[in-house]
Length: 367
Ligand SMILES: C[S@@+](CC[C@H](N)C(=O)[O-])C[C@H]1O[C@@H](n2cnc3c(N)ncnc32)[C@H](O)[C@@H]1O
Image (tube, rainbow, N blue to C red; front, side, top):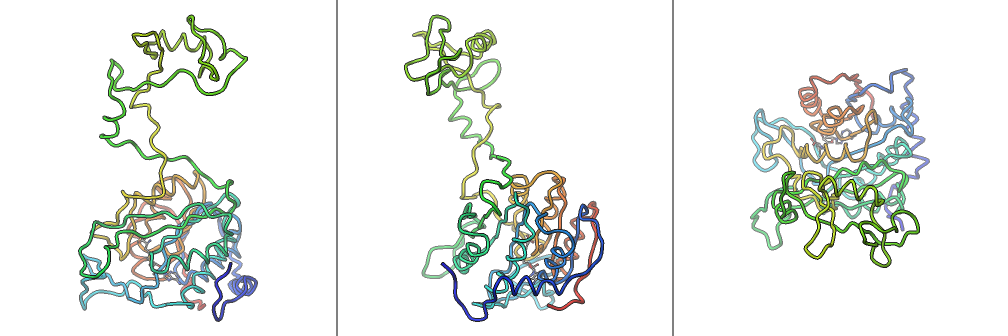
């Protein structure tokens, strides 16, 4: 399946176009970078300067084809209430096919930049998102689709329109090669209520619940042998060897019921957290952002931790206020940010005062 529209270029044409920006600066791929200028040029520049297959994580939050301008006041940023004194942060005026092709061109370059274990998160709204999903399938391959994440972006709103309130946007998550992508099993902690519900017993070590000391599957080895006069139930084996069970029992980590049934104690403080699902409720955007459409930092922090490693290169080609760059830097990753807005550049620099990076101005080059 493909989206057909006028003026859709072939991948070859796009890659060919990117060769125009072959700049032979020999620079340090290991150092973070902030590129100021159009991101087609910025991405081409990276591609032609040693970054092909080098980037482990890309997060982008492009304009959503809203057909409006986003401004920024001195102490306030808003798209709803604006003042004549506000400065234009960026325009979002591309619509329809032109918008899709703008994004597609850049996604094709990003795919070239992604490492074999890399992945990309694309943040978008529900009005244009489904078209973008088809483009993502085309560029990265349907097989490499991992999730469509629903992100609750705000508290409920009471706009006066004959429809349900819109509280969500979406994130499309793709791997360069599904199954090979960096995945650090970051989990979310249990809430206090969940802890109270799950761990109702208490001893000197804290709150706990109990689980069977056996697991499915028979065993001929030690875990199928007798322990303290008991055998594992039919079709099951001990979770650990009888010797280890004795140690656990000596340490008071096994609880015996009145009927002589042993169960293993599991403490609330040892719980590894819950697998994160594809509906994100706790990453709403800041009420008072310092850049329009600024995204939640905890969300970006989690994405960086989940899908990149220490020393990975993390790219945000629509950097805005630089939240991705900040979180990458905080977690010991190398970051690359690109944006063409002067306001973005100054906000990023304010937020990255302690980071070390090269600044490269590409704004004199035209796309
Ligand atoms: C939705 S905002 C990103 C907000 C960002 N995620 C944050 O948390 O602050 C989109 C950004 O993309 C930038 N942008 C749009 N088109 C661009 C282009 N062709 N090249 C570089 N930056 C671009 C805009 O200047 C804007 O800062």
